[in-house]
Length: 197
View 1 (cartoon, rainbow, N blue to C red):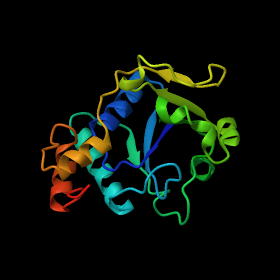
View 2 (cartoon, one colour):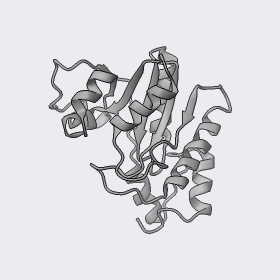
View 3 (cartoon, rainbow, N blue to C red):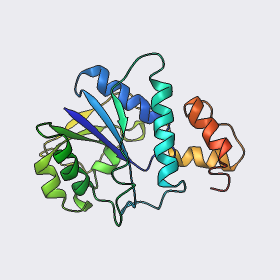
């Protein structure tokens, strides 16, 4: 099964990589495809361009694979698509490219609680399964996830890191070297990203 990991990745951080590694080593999926969003409909527009976020994902994968080769790829399928970004369009397009493969959408528990707001969510649920990652902030809180939904909830001790926090730290002149991979940190500095978040 291929895990589709969508997000703005603005920027990609060690928490994202931790989720991908844990899913691959658990044997639940054979490959993770990172899919930076193009024009997300339920979130604010990313600060970094699509091309910059794609490059940061590629750099993060390269850093992560230095010690052990992991089956992680990055797709520009949403960044290169014109108009709004919808998961249903991404899934149907990838199904044509990976004929015969099964897919699971990797999603945080907070986002899954709003899955019914997604474009054509009922059809999306019919096409693929979901792997719901419990976020550290959600563990002791009730949520609105319907227990009758077909999904696999997974507690993998997700790291308490957010892209919002990273952008704020950079804007304040603080280091984020412990939160992102070395090459991503260098890329952010060299390109002056998030300096005025």
